[in-house]
Amino acid sequence: MLRGEFPDAGEQSPEELLAAYGTVLAETVETVGVEEIVDATGLDRATVAAFADGDVADRTLDEAVAVLATGPNRPDADALQAEAQDILLMGMTTAVMDVESLASGIDDELEPKEIQQKIEGRYPVTLAEYALLHSYIEGEKR
Image (cartoon, rainbow, N blue to C red):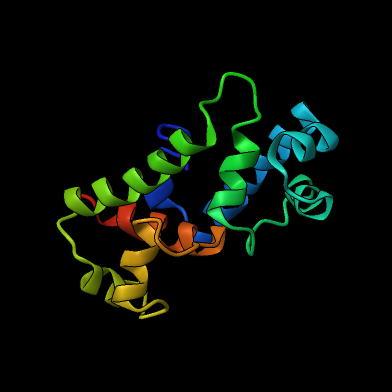
């Protein structure tokens, strides 16, 4: 989700990458504090507690960037969201792939139109879906 923070994303399985996201998010919650994040983001306590526990698969990218943005020396949530989307879009460009080949590469777990909407931020993407896309795209870069 953060440029440079997961340089070996293409060498990790989606599950490993998701766990790495969970670690970064849990560290952010530990550093900032649950109540502070709830106050700063408007997320409910249960959602922030899930991030603290590393239970992130069903959490959305929007929620994750809200949490990350509370961390010290992090950009705001909008900048983090744009960066996360850019990682996928630029990765697809570098790997020379379109949404149809991406869908095929992930065994059609997501439909091409759905992938496009999620990558462009028009439809929510879970962190599990993001990890699946991120891992595959990075693994296909030339």
